[in-house]
Length: 115
Image 1 (spheres, rainbow, N blue to C red):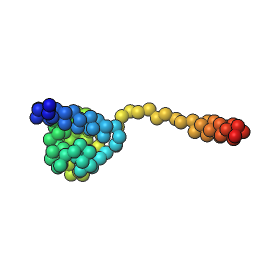
Image 2 (image 1 turned 45 degrees about the vertical axis):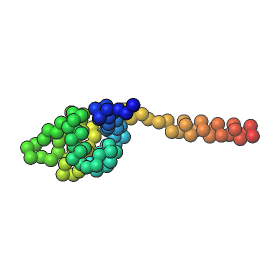
Image 3 (image 1 turned 180 degrees about the vertical axis):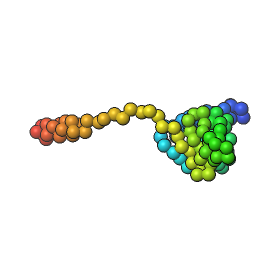
Image 4 (image 1 turned 135 degrees about the horizontal axis):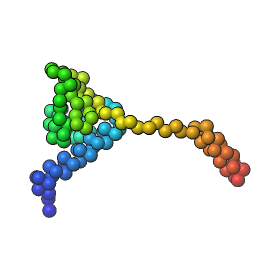
């Protein structure tokens, strides 16, 4: 049984919304052309229509300004052809490099003695 047109549209919408969430997590910014490609759109205008549909409502920061901010925290620079994703307040985790290197070398020495 083939999905109906409505089901197919819903699946495309959900898939694109999930991909958009992944783009937001993976990139600080992304050219509109690349975002459209990743979301399987053929044109920039299709991408902007999708953005409006998922709640990325464009609101001018200043009158006659080409930079718009979305409800998701994205900024879309129409003139610069770029989406700028909101940075999350992620905590920087300090990796104990010296301790990891020392433990790896000690483990390598133990393996060498066994062999």
